[in-house]
Structures are given as C-alpha cells and as structure tokens.
Length: 240
Image (tube, rainbow, N blue to C red; front, top):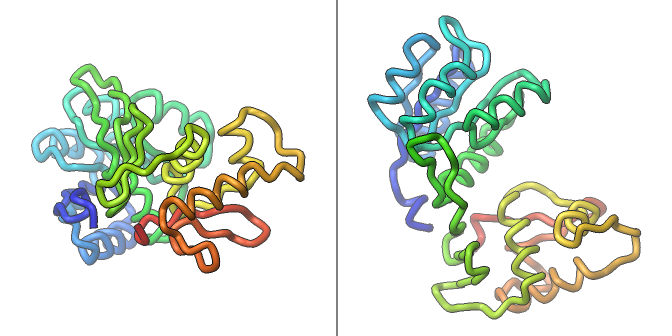
C-alpha cells in the first residue's frame, strides 16, 4: 500500500440520518479509519475546527445549520478535504459547494465501497488548502507502487522513472483521477485531445496498449487498466 493508505486517517461524518450514519461509521471503521459521527449541524463546525480531521463527509441538509454554511465557516481554518454526501442532485447545490471549497460532491444513494474509493482518492491528493481557502495545485497522485508527478509530468513505478509520451501521461492521469470509474472512449478523446470521438479513432486504444506494456500490465489479462466491454476503460487503484 502507499504511505497515505497505511496512515490511520480521521474522518468526521456529519450526517443526521441515524441508520446511514451508523452504517458508514461501521464501514469506514472496518476499513481502518477513525470515525467521529456528528448529527447536529450546529455543533459540526466547532468540532471540525477543534479536531482537524483528514477529511469531512458533510450532508447538505442538517438540523441546526446546513452543510453549505458549515463548509463556508470552516474552509479558511481547515486544511483537510471536504466531501459532500447528499440526496440533492441539484446542479446549483453542487456548484455552490465546490465554489466555497468542497473537494467532491457525491449524490445518495451510493454504495459504501464506491464512497470509500472516492475518499481514498481525495486522501491520495497531496494538494491542500491555503489559510484563505484557496486550493494549491495538485502535485501528485500515488497508488501503491505507481506515482504520478503532475507538475513535471513524470511517472514512476516502484520509484523507477517510466518514459511516457505527454499524451500517454495525460491519458494515464485522467484515468487515475477517475479511479474505479469507467471512462468511455468519447470522454477520453474529448478530455485528452479536445475533439469529438468519431467512432473510428483508435488513438486511445493504442495509447492504452502502450501504457499497459510500459507499466507491466499483462495485455492478455490486464489488471491495472482494464477494458469494460462496450463501455470503456477502468483504472483499478488497488492493483498497482
């Protein structure tokens, strides 16, 4: 495991649904996290500021004080990650949360395993918030033996530099940033090349094949970057 996953991280879960709160508290505790559960929004801000956890999972609608208000109050004094977990799928709520300093926004219902992947992704990021609430640029991502230096666009496997083209690095980074999420060829072409996928362009497939070869992922039975038939490609963080 990477250093970040060997660390015992503290999570404060602000959730007023007792059944969901208890379920998530038990699940994250079983995965090696220290979890503090708080149901009252009016008490959450002071608790977060006092304990300074690695990550806060914050509901949007809470008794006493809503999640957006809590996020706004703590962001300038809290350098950890903030993930909103809410039943609201309103784009306005999501934009508002991200603009005031949230790091991620997840809509209920969600499987605990998927939420765990999102949490681990946030905790892998080496960026942090400055005291004025602004984000420092993300510097690197790491997944066990794989490390991506984003600023220099360097890739390391077992601390050995892997020679990737800029296009290969950009594709690998995009997949890694969406670990455990299937990305279609359409998305990958659009985000890495800025053009629409015409249904015939094999550039992405060729780069995937090259990445597998360079990164030691068996092309006959890939385990790290897998093909999801009819849907696209999936980066598997635990297999590096």
